[in-house]
Image (cartoon, rainbow, N blue to C red; front, side, top):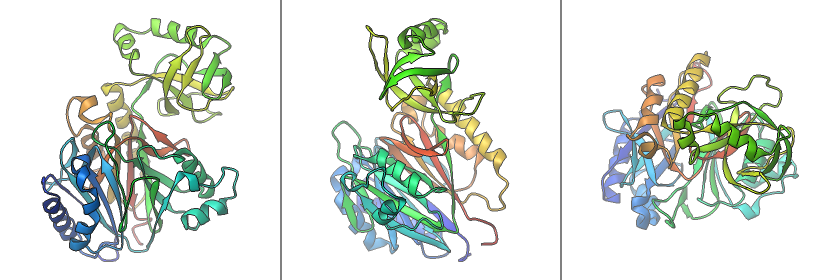
Length: 406
């Protein structure tokens, strides 16, 4: 088994950090038949006062060359009975260990003010993080809660590493004003982004469930300025939106008061747009006098968009649709061996009214693999070939070997 990729995850709810660490290390290490090359650790904000103790305590119990992690408002992991649990607002620790033969592992930490200009060459980005572009690395990024430059970092990595996959999330705290933490090897960081680059005998596939369903019809932006839509189909956007809302059912109109979003079409050339073809963005405000609508992203004339609604049913249907598509596309001989889950703090029990919804749905389609992750302040994943920071989303990174023979 030593030449095969192996992953393990353990989850602990012990209220003592020492006890939780001893618990997850013992269970995760015993699940592997070869020494771990990589560790990923996610710690709930209930341990916020003890973040500085995590890495030293782990080092006493665990020998692993590379480890990254962060804090979360909740953590996700695998219980002793093999079930995945999404633990929100309680003390919890999730540890994923991996034995990765034939995989090169590199870590980095970057700050927003240290990023190259977006018109810099790919070499500037390669030099920044110290990762060669070939073979194409697979990235896991963990960012501070209000990391400046995260959008520029994602654009830069997409540009410098074509063909790479990027997943991750922003560290989150349990409440407003709570502190967050990033962990990389033996260092604790409060700002910036820590990254993991995996290259060689590994494939990282993604499911990015944005949890919305389209309403109305796609429209074209005919006039815009920065993030403000000034005209839709040569009409006043607010008038268009009011007409659309008037055509909805009473239940949908109620939902539109607090769960209305804009979906930006990701493929300019696709004629028939379906659910999943959009990058979902928030509506930040409207101008009642001029009728303009401000959204949470830059917008330009010619782009197509469609309004969307989000609720528990839409989120469930969206994730199930993507899981079905993923399952139907699987033709590889090598099956999935592990998954990382990055879920928005706005999902979970607060959205569905019951715990473990997304992870249990995931397990119906992709069974018997360890899952580890956390509840994020923002989720990182690709839509339409480019990587974005999302909200109210569940991002899964599914790991497997390149082929069964490797």
